[in-house]
Image 1 (cartoon, rainbow over the protein chains, first blue to last red):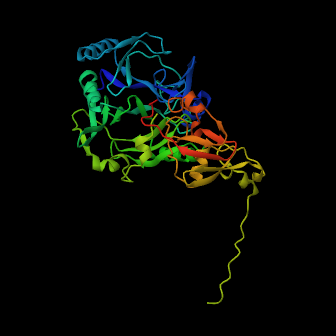
Image 2 (image 1 turned 45 degrees about the vertical axis):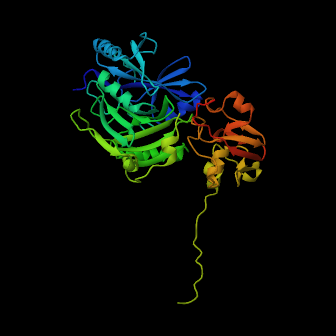
Image 3 (image 1 turned 60 degrees about the vertical axis):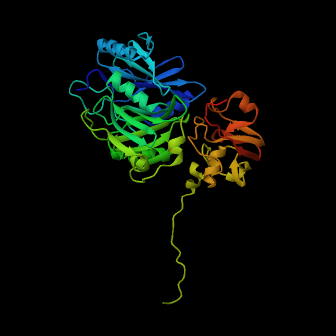
Length: 305
Length: 134
């Protein structure tokens, strides 16, 4: 692996009902920075990201996710991954460079779960980004929850096992953990990097649904500070602070003003591709999801956008 | 032991604290006189709770400790708290059209996290499964 080829989540485009409310939430509360605007979209990033943007908000009539894009190390490898997808029988389409500001050409395809995934290899840098010469720990003083970066998303849809096989066979994803029910895989956490997950899925009848978009925080105390801010600003809270058994992340879940679930989290183990895939039996899922409580709440599993 | 008399603990009071928005409902602009707010009665299933004119119905239900309507995202995106307004008038805030289309809205459907009462209301929970069904 050595984090060559497909490297990491690049950005995700999320639908919001009211851009002004969304910007207060993502900028002032979560602590992201606005890079630029283009029509009905606003482009944001965390202070610890080099690339042009990592979150795209699009104002429309519904909440949810438009697509998630992963970054490839070179244009040659972008072409190779496209060929592997096509050879596997997956149709791809091309998005011209510059369609999103600062981002080169993209290649898109649909997963069986009904989610659009894109690949790209070229991004300009934008401010703020980590300093490169004699770098201080931040280029700016973090504000709000102090999210360092966009980290991962959890998607809901049908055909999770097929989606994970496709991602493994065509794009070099590895499955770090999964949940096995009597009738098969019902959830899966997959990675292209050293992180315990870059993307996760839960089996669900409706295609294309979003469970959450996650941002990384520095440590557990920052998760506590996020909880303090959620209470202070009366942000709609879902669950936490708590810890996951799966991935071991320390976490809190809440909703943006359009109802998209967000997570801010810290920790999680370091993954290597020779690690066995960790298995959870469905009757232990409560402990897997909420390690301290040991049980799920109904809204966490069923509330989606 | 002699007769125990309740001690008078000298406590400082902070008159400004009653203006805190937690004491006045979500999104409320602090006012000195909370009695001036219009309060309506919301009936859903066998339960009844109070909701101020400037308060979202689902939030008022949660504060009342009632669980008649499912609570989801509280932002108009997920559809969990979809209801039918059987009687009464509401102010509608924006909500996802996948859950409440314009036709649905004309027929009285709404997400209860995105409505504020203009009168007493009678509601019936009306979740849609799957959420994108027509």
